[in-house]
Image (tube, rainbow over all chains, first blue to last red; front, side, top):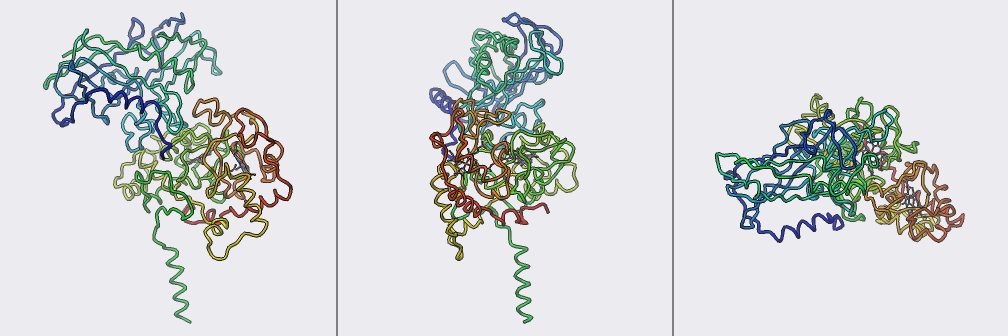
Length: 268
Length: 333
């Protein structure tokens, strides 16, 4: 039991939390709903599955058939440095490229003016190790989350799943040129392993802070640039790595997640 | 005379209807690692789990149950199969391990990839070469079944079957698959006058000395991952490396228990040895230097004379638990 430490993330997130001033508990009934919108784009274009052709910085063309990712653990910060952490049980969302209705993460926060948005791409290590009764809704590992965002052999969630075709991908036995990126890894349960959980901090001051008031519905509109998965600080070549799942190389892709999200505007 | 008969009758009748005892930790076993607080074993939960374990609806074409690969008379392994044999006769790549003393195991599977028993069944149910189903679909089959909703209600208070109640019920059954009644257990606990023969006693000492650093008493495993020098198999299974991506884990596998070996042949993660004398011959003379070979075995394996090997085999026989493989409580009803 004592050995079942959740490595790396837990430790780092504890340290990270310590530094922040957490706001006291709020009465759920006094919270106001607002949304964070994840608007999927690819480079300068809209994401259109199975149709548009895109180009990565490795100079390869590709099409996307499947795109899904988890966002979780939302936190909103005010100018005075205080943060409100959204009730963890209601802070997990699966964004699906195939269903535009899934692009909104609806969260409940107190009224106020928020200048910073913090969230996680993926599922935190605590939840990844939690009792199965705490894994409901999009986290239900039964396969209810479409196309399986869960690995059964080495339990853990797939944080981002992106599949498609590219002339640069090698021919597979079914005669297709497919690429498959299934990126996960929460740091390990009884032994440390890869950790691809990414925490994103978005400064809202340039493009519009969120003014959350009762009877109004603030929406923080983000663009998620899917091309950054391949074309971020690490250039990922489909020809060289057409299939990446639970492997050390997956960390190069996950590092690119840090550049995927930009704040476009806020509707208040 | 009549009274005596009545008495005997009463006794055996009472035996049949023993009140359900729940999970009892054998006195000579360590504390379990399973978090019973999250899933206390109850009569209804256990009985439901037992039925689910033997339920072929858990597979895509309703042909295969957990019990097809984990057969009680073989100490819940798939006797006679080197690697598992699943749906549409597809073969897996590893040997089915026993469902035995799981409450004391911190990690499951040969590579330890699964850390929570309540999440384990997702793996066989969804694996292409095992049951090839989706958990969501199994739940809907069970929900539509005439019996299951009521059984779930009895066990968990709701007819609505969830992933959590489904998994926890299977865990309850598997946690009760405890093997602790072998001759060895009687000797250790000084039950009755049970004693080792001279040959068994000599074998016991040898196993403690030569095998105990990995196959540690009383469970006969220390639950660690090691490379015991059997060399890479045909499919170059990297073992624990797959779960940790750590080079120092390549070719390491979970140390299996030595209990009930008489029922669980073939042996090792890929079932490559059919007899125990072949396993001993391996430790004695064919240990191979693949990466991460256990330090204990680096200098010439484990030398044993022919007589010592006989004694070890005699002792290993005392670890067979007839009661476990015939316990009606664990059988398909």
